[in-house]
Image 1 (cartoon, helix red, strand yellow):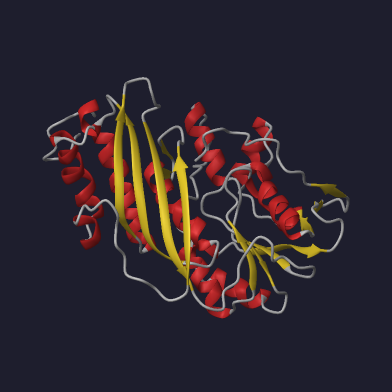
Image 2 (image 1 turned 90 degrees about the vertical axis):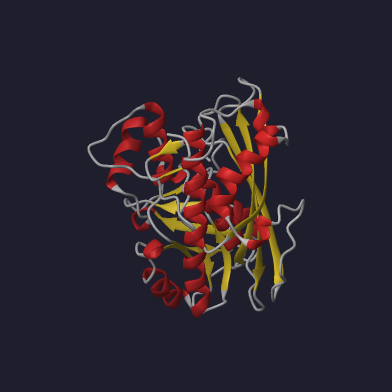
Length: 341
């Protein structure tokens, strides 16, 4: 079903030409979804009010397949992913841009669904899409639709969060179960059906981060374990900070349906992508307070301390198994499921 006023059922090359068809696309699909005073000016650059603190800026591109999956779609993913990248610096998210590369013949009804999903996610996160761009390419030159986003936020004074700030003795907190997004996308892509419903955890994390920072600014590192999963994220933090990280397998939340699917298909939950989880490395003196604050939030109810930072061996991640043995958690060679975001 196409939008009530848009006269086309499928995207045409002319919709990316900058002419009347392009203006119709902007005015009848994008502007109603993202309407705000700044965007309505339709200037080449958005002029934004300033904010206190340092500026945080990020950009990302989204090519997930399939476009629609349990718990989300490419539009929700684009908004949440950008908000989350800003949030991992401790920034208060404010403004986003969205660029669309659309294949000729793409159904307008699907575009409307994606844009509506983006608008809903932006409202949930309290951010505005204030600029954008649309290009249409020949049929066969792209896979349906790609979305590029950029985001701006402001970091309050006293916040110093970076991947280089982990220190021996710090504790590692995980906000919830891992592998939900990766397994939900895989099941939809491959047509695998399970007795239980697997859903992506795709969600904006800025509210959770705000709750954490409200109790302490002694949070040294924040990361969202997306591509490469928890294993890749912890290895990145260990290398960038020059420390070792030791976690316990029995403390890591994994949903039974994800664990069972991984056993069936030969995946490691540590390697699967997440889109609504974070890893925090915090001062041990405030870890309990931060954990309590996280558990008051819908996206942090399963939060748990899963390990600690050590001095040696630097750049290494280790995991204690239920048997008492310890194994090395290597950086994954590649994302086990391409085009996950």
